[in-house]
Length: 359
Image 1 (cartoon, helix red, strand yellow):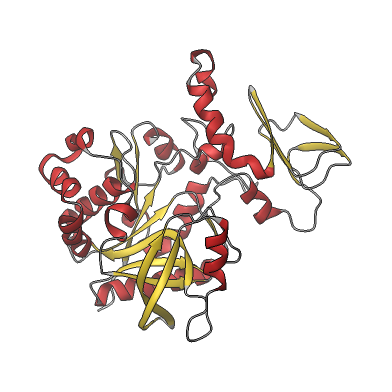
Image 2 (tube, rainbow, N blue to C red):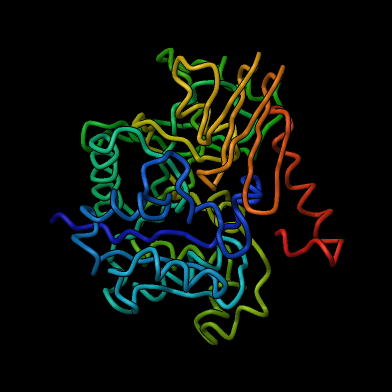
């Protein structure tokens, strides 16, 4: 019997590496980064609506701080489908709580998919085909299905999944047992991963997309086994348990421990939009610069320029490989190879009471 997917959007992240555009009450998922007019959250919801059979089948998990913003951006979402965490405790509690709530409404055989709110997907048809296949696999096997992205370069910003034995095909897509998860590796390790070949001549590593599909009962049982300190507190106390929960990612709490994880390599075009350099990957084309602002440039190349006020003008002279962002009362200028250090600037601002309003 075919079974539809219940998609859950994880929308509680901060997106600090997109500061100053991304701030406490306006995180990355609320932003439009491509000039389309839709935020990343709205784009994520739109592409999942077909799988969800409309708004009644779509769920969102977010924090109390961001709940009003989610309601404003997704007014069609039923109020009972918005799960609001009292405080962020990383993805393990969010996934566990959402799975509990959905299983109570639809039963433990409900097939659930979790999707970050801030990803870019290129090929919508291929994306839906992959989700259909993952839903079939989760329906017929006690499987926790992860979507692995075929690597295009030796990234040190993504986690990696090592494929084990192929267990079959679903929807014409191959499925492998997961041998190992690796957190963000160093450059040498990432290059070694991409140079590795399996017996078929293919690279057995994919990027960990953070998207996964499973039956509710399967994950609830595995959480009892590997993360009882999370699931038992949530069962006993509900939201009141959050003050007692440790911060843990779902990868660390469950995915790296369970033997039920399978990976389905995907090639639908994907980016997690981790920092400002992602804008260049998506939008540069043949242009010298990525200009999401009025820009007058002299001898400027490889720049990313963004301004929220369309009346403001950014003028550059003799610059190369920089990011310039103008948002309200902050101007950020950073070399593209130092954008990861924006998080360090956030920490510095947190230490200055007079500057915390910039966060």
